[in-house]
Amino acid sequence: MVSKKLAMRLDKKQTELANAEAKVKVLKGEVAELKQQVQLELVKKLQDNLHTDDLGTIEQFIAQVAPTDTITSTTTDGGELDGH
Image 1 (cartoon, rainbow, N blue to C red):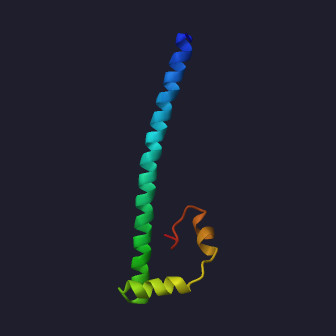
Image 2 (image 1 turned 60 degrees about the vertical axis):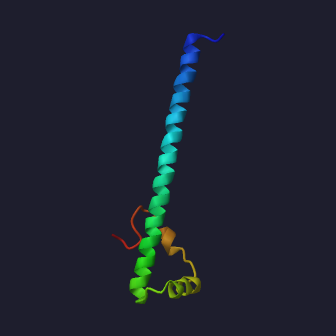
Image 3 (image 1 turned 90 degrees about the vertical axis):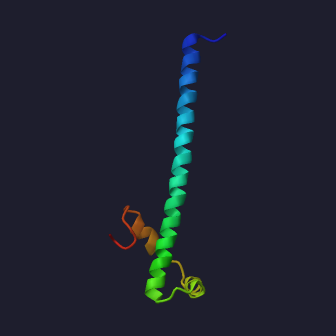
């Protein structure tokens, strides 16, 4: 049999772990939702800039564009991509 103090510490840590796991689950959901919102906003901006609602045209444009490092450098300061 373990000491009561040790058993209480274990119980407290298990509770803390359960709370942290619940928070992680909530945060993962929030991140997934925000990623979806970002994608929708980017598609909307492409629609506006390309003056089309045709998703095929937008997909072709995306396929032709080469990724650059500017995205990572503009977001590392916590700001938005368009500077607002």
